[in-house]
Image 1 (tube, rainbow, N blue to C red):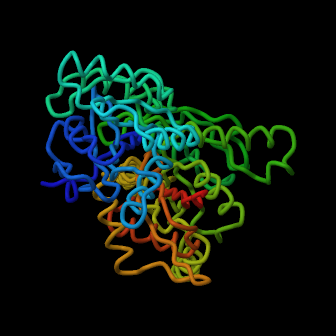
Image 2 (cartoon, rainbow, N blue to C red; image 1 turned 30 degrees about the vertical axis):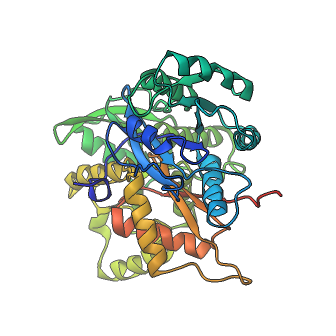
Length: 449
């Protein structure tokens, strides 16, 4: 199975390393050495690699994406100029840069010009002195201190000499994969039960817990403090955080209501997935939509539970369908369940919905699969021409999950409608059920002459 049709795997943030250098200094050979497999095309002719080519790599248990680039000559013209532009894009996209120099040739004018561009980028740079096959060449490599990029790491991409030390230096330059922000990594999944007052949040939690451990009162706003409840569901332990309903905009709320609103936001931030409880027998209100927006803005997975379904007759269903189309259009991706917390009807449908939403929230698409998908998407439906210009997607990566976040490197800013089209197609292709998707554009800066 190739990388392009491999499974979509849940992982955390993956930093990006761009490999740059003059033509024929052995970048692609070094890429193969880093990957531990022959992926990059290697030929003893300058200019074999023309585009940015991304690969998934792993060293000492840490995953990162390697972007191989064509030979970079800042003074190039024609095809070579386009290759150089691709390399500049790769550098601006990357978290760190591996600059490869041929130790046997030494420092050239082109190398010094590349160093100036790398300095301007502000990215951490690791200097690789390649083609160091013996002690004599190692002595020559020390001359590369003069580039002003710090210690040159002698390496033989062909024979593997020094590659371990080089990779250790690369890992030190790349940003550490962020720790999960949840208190218990690997502990029970955290679920915030949110919704406006008196929709049945506490009743739902009691039904799930199977006991009256939460104060339930038919007066709106009984719960003020978030209540953590460990609940066994579907053979697993879950941590449910019950929250006070948000009654007013925080600025308008007073006293304990103000703090209840803040606590609700805190509960959402502490959770991995939010269950928005709506009263199925009442119209979807502006307040419901506002809470929904809070969950989306926090980047949490989402399940929508319509409670009090026993009070929903056929007339109400008709109007509810219309309201869902109108008011929940921004979260069509969220799983929806109908329940009656008071009797326990269909409450067992919550766990499969939570599992789906969390799986979507933690989905990562491999770099190869993402760029193959973007290539097909652009071929089928190119961006419209605006004022004689047509922005193009040059390269895409998914640096983080939870929620899935995509960075698109473009030749110009994409229309908001085209960005929404990309999101829709991403969902069609890869699922992403129950999770918001974040798309960030990085239009290429105009090259200064």
